[in-house]
Length: 476
Ligand code: ADP
Ligand code: MG
Ligand code: ZN
Image 1 (cartoon, protein in one colour):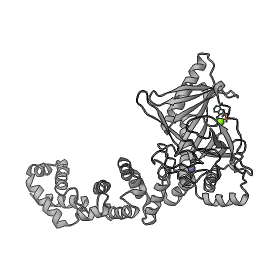
Image 2: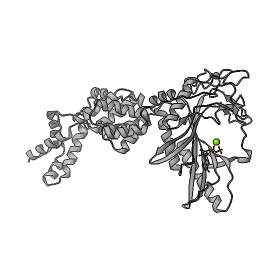
Image 3: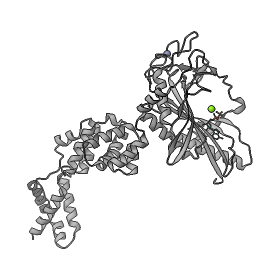
Image 4: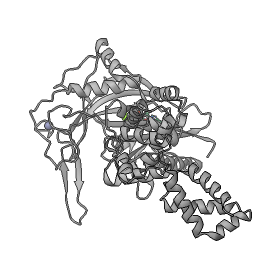
């Protein structure tokens, strides 16, 4: 395996977060009943005219600038022809020779992946195949004409791991800029992967295949790993590779040939005559550049510097904009960022996951977390109580500090109350007391355990231990 090098280039599609479609006023909302968000334009009726959605261009430019691309001074839409039932016009309005932006890059862990181009296009509809025998397929055009950007990289990626990192990084940037929600399950972020292998040290690239149909990062990584193995073993057998498009079969965990280069479409691109070419001038570029602001990598560096967080913590906390915003809201009201980071990345992250909730909808708002963190530091509550309160907060939707107050979960500091339980426990366990007197230190731990049980874990541990030892010393 080692004598081969893997070469990967990605084509990433992201749906833009506009209210309305690319060339008409229909809603882009996901999940509505089929064909309820269509009009003559996006249903492809003859004689209709498209109109460019300015907001879509703005979002695409934001992505382009964040990825260091040069916006084109002359940009034009083009018709890409193919026949498919989910494409009622029989052509897709895309861009070809005059894309919106070119020549950018994205650095991931010290490696630079060049971005060849970013262009805009409209999405196609969706076919719904019913599973029954002898059945039919129907088409839902709600997605038809939803604005997309396609980000095409140069073949600079060298492993499936790096491909996954690149995608994660793109996703984070697009989410940060609110260019796309990047929801992979809903198809808002999709990726085709081109891959070839070559002998280490070779100049020329090998024959590539293009893999489609992967709908998770994991699927991308697995498909690339499978395909690299397949290509290398073909070459080792002395067989030639075919340039072809292959589909990832997630059930079988293999790629399967779909069409070879000879069968490839000739799309007969030509400039879209119904739309005017447009120019992105420097003042527009400047305006968008100002809107782009702080990018995830910069925010991560700032978290390390301003909050003295570790590289790892800063990475996790800035992975999503919502989490980063949440953390900063907490940190504004509380002086110990590390403690906040631990709770956010630990229990809160786990509860969000198990309850399938976004951090913005968490029952534990930033004020709640600040309140709780202060109580911990003041010694009013223990970590185990907080865990319980957070769990219950997620189960009931009630703020955790309320639960702590209502259920009286705060630590017992009252020495009379603690001493009463100590006395009772010692009387109930003469053997443990005897053991202690005979020099068995573990007997103390046993007694502390008993007392904690009686107080539901709420006795202040320091007071408890000190008073217990004093009490034991006094009795003969
Ligand atoms: P095509 O004309 O086949 O669409 P492009 O030049 O447009 O090819 O490139 C499409 C994608 O394939 C790009 O992301 C590019 O980086 C990638 N690519 C091109 N050649 C190779 C190769 N030999 N191995 C891996 N990826 C490649
Ligand atoms: Mg291509
Ligand atoms: Zn429409």
